[in-house]
Image (cartoon, rainbow, N blue to C red; front, top):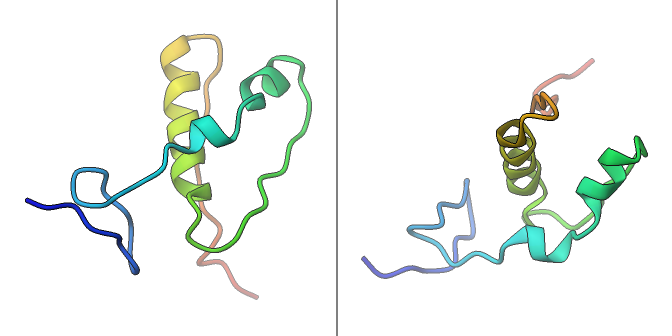
Length: 77
């Protein structure tokens, strides 16, 4: 199967071209170790959600932290 640029819906690295967000967001894990806050602010569809999901997996795999990813996107007033 050929990969392509996805323009709608969730990305799948087996199907879609993707840039590893971890290479663009170096230092976040160090901020967590230092008990610092951080903000991830970027354009739509730039990989923020995927990065946070991957970060939670890496933190949980390390055994030092218990990370939980949750989305409040569907919550409205």
